[in-house]
Image (cartoon, rainbow over all chains, first blue to last red; front, side):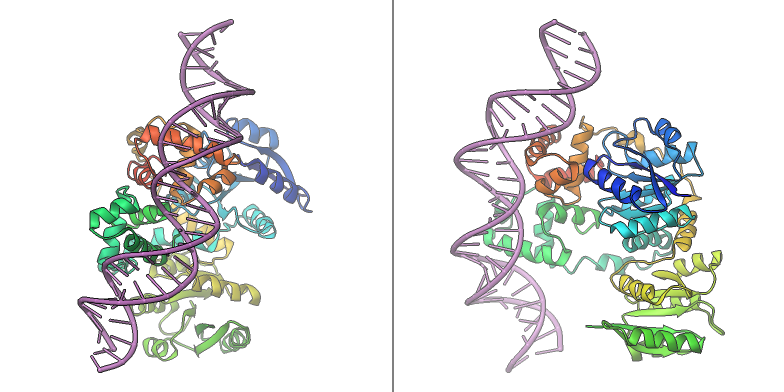
Length: 218
Length: 218
DNA sequence: TTTAATTTCCCCGAATTCGGGGATTTACTA
DNA sequence: TAGTAAATCCCCGAATTCGGGGAAATTAAA
């Protein structure tokens, strides 16, 4: 008896390749594929899946809402989330919403099939990074005294680097930062390179997002 | 540079086979093996491990206490728990104590090596069954928050625009966003222009900062 | 005192973003 | 049915950022 899988994903390319992968593997069967969850309940009733693969980032109603609806109407069906990013809140929300697994889109085809089986059997496959975040949610309410340790983890940015990063978060360009800090454009670039290195990022947007989310600057 | 692994396990047979497995695999190195944790701190200082494998069921001081001590004195070292049974309380306690991974003793040798790497890289490998239990801990405290009302101020962004903005916050370039959303580079640009107009900004960094601070995207 | 880290400045070429146009299709609505 | 909003795609030129180099002065630490 094959495991019936229904997929919700707005990325047509990915949807197609998953379709081929799953439907072409013995023991698996595609019950349905849908580019959005506008008709979620009807789609599920029609396709009768054992396992649902759901993209998190979807236009219109997103995957998080999707899981909530699924678990409300079909509590028995296990839903595995697929995402392009390991966004903290997404992970947390998806799990609270009732997701049973959480894998990245970059997961290898063979691993995806494994994960489907695991979910079907009542397990919860997660990428190790996601798993670490999940553990983090459980571990955080424990500690309060080691705030100094966390705040100390400001990625070892120097004062000047933090200043530059702060300017960046406020929307300034390199040229404007140079003006603001009374240094040359090239010096700003030097600092930026160091900041990228220390934050493990490669663009202004990533740096800004990390600076805000990790509360490196305020 | 090999990953240095130190093992604490009272089962001598298992300890030996793990020793042979790990020390005999390229990229791994046994830093030390100990049948109990009576001299935990000294043992760790002596062996200087990157990763610790710790059995939960040990005579005397058990593995849970062991993790607590390790994380208190060596917060940087990641500890992976090994257990014969998937006992609910053990899982929960170990995680709260600060364990970074939780695998069964029945795990295959190749998978054990994988898990060690994952833990070393900051991930949290767990058996699917353990993972499901962990999710259970998070799913039970269902909280009804009224955050949705505040987030209504989404600057009249369309779904597509929010999607693009979300990608931006995750550090994607125009090209990557185009790929992700299955649209062309030029369409991304069109959306970006609209986003800038609606958010009253003029650069990626400003858009990202506003998106995060105003909670336009999750 | 020698090393290491910080802060400063410069160049080049490639890649990316920005501003300001224009255009088409679809879908909803007045 | 005409009009509007959304989503899609295209071009040009200017401005900006990125990666990978190098280098010098100051300061802190070993």
